[in-house]
Length: 39
Image 1 (spheres, rainbow, N blue to C red):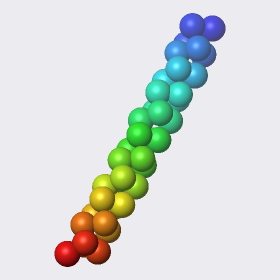
Image 2: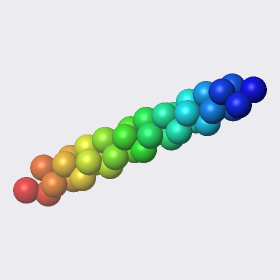
Image 3: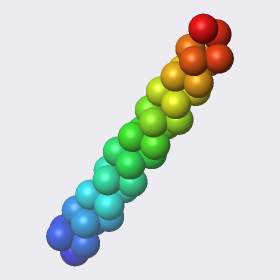
Image 4: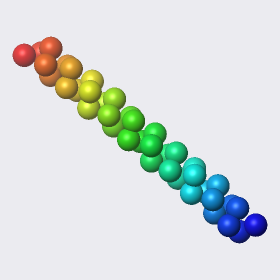
């Protein structure tokens, strides 16, 4: 039972990390596109 909950929390943690990575990628892409269009 403990390992089951641990697996759930781990998967949720990994999902959160992936979400943050994707958000960072999108933000950096937007920033890059705005910079390139500005100059």
